[in-house]
Amino acid sequence: MQYHGFLMKRYVFRRLIPYAAVLAVAFGVFSLISVLAVMEGFKDEMRARIRGSLSHLSIFGPYGNDLLGSPELIEALLALEHVEAAAPFVVGQGIYRASTVTPCEIRGIDPVAEAAVGDFDAYLLRDDEIRELLADETRMLGDERIPMTAEEIEAVFSRERRDLLFDSFRAFDGDSGFRLPPQPIVVGIEVLRRNHARIGDIIELQSFSPRTLEARNEEFLVVGSFQTGVFEQDLSWMFIPIQVAVSFLDLFDEEQLDDRISGISVRLDDYENAGAMRETIRSVVLEELYGDRLESYPLVRTWEDQRRNLLRAVAVEKRIISVMMMLIVLFAGVMIFLILTLMVIEKTRDLGVLRSLGATRGGVISLFLRQGLTLTLIGMVLGSIGGVILVANLNPIHDAIRDATGFQLFDPTIYYLSRIPAKMRVEDWGTVLVPAFAFGLLGSLIPAVWASRQDPIKALHHE
Image (cartoon, rainbow, N blue to C red; front, side, top):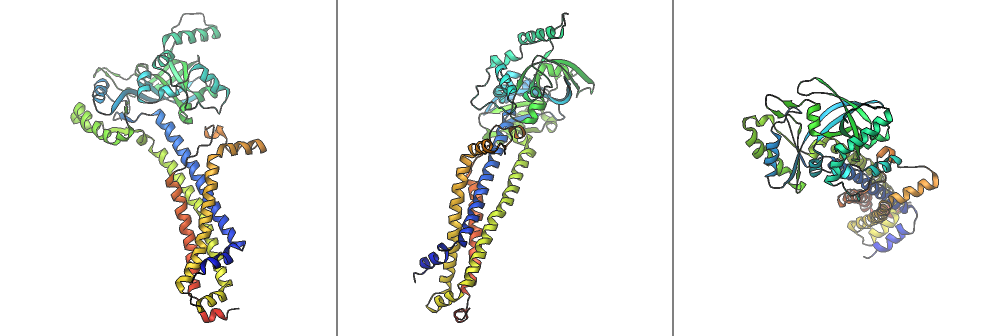
């Protein structure tokens, strides 16, 4: 009997109430697609920024600044397949005194080598770029920015630049005596934006030696700035040449006649090889160099290992928001259930007529399932189209609302982003559409089974 299409049009499309269920499904799908796209965009943006400031792999000493034999280790690393570059580094904690006293993280690097293992050349700033960023507190350099060359990086830390900046500082300070310029230091752009220091200022850096535990105190000349895109790093990280860091932190071991550094950064030809190379470095390089002392040198970590808690926090936040937003889709399924249940009650006599004319229980179930799934699918299609349009035009829509009302929904000074990031993934789309279809199916199936179990005789006498 070909009655399903006729009754669907009569029961569903000629009434207004079922369209409420369509809107509920559409709104739920629309909201979930939009939210997940923004969360994924934030996650990718954060991963890219963290990745830019860290190398693919890092080899750490057992107790912080306690790694010996770095030249031999670097030579052995560069001999390995998939290893493109390696560079030593020193990390220490301290405070700097300029216009205020502020905690910081001291990072001793070889500037040119650091650019080879990470993106130091991409976020070290030229003087004109520093001026642009200081003129707009929310501005960030785009991906199209041309990274610094090795010559430009060397020029930032050069004696010539220090002499020029130091002469300007002495002239401003009224100092006419002869003094050598302090060692160079590069600070984050947020230090400059908050007027903690300026290019050409002398800041006092205080720390302690990890080797002797003695207090260390020295003046440094601010010669440049950087912007990694991670707010905490741009506010607290400070770069100095690695030999300056070794001297400042007193890391030269007179017994071993070697510097004790924090570790070595390694760049691979492809990050996909990081897992295998981590085991290769540990089982081949470190075992060969350190032998019985291998257990004291176990820390070979990827950049994801070093920021695992932060990346997990973002992923957990995305899952929590997904579950909370899924309640909207569940509500849409409940609406379909209620609408079909009311329809079964209202059309009980019609069901009795259908059954008496030969309609089977399976036919009645199919009738109501088709109605519920039709409402669900229409809502899913409309919600998907709306979500795609919103994600594609998210920033223009935000700007239009800001221009019309003066209210800024997305404050760049809070999120350290000039635009709202958004990225749609097939996996996220499936996360939205599969539950939406499942809730619609469940909301349709229960009334459909109930309708099929109506007694035809009692249904014909139903008032």
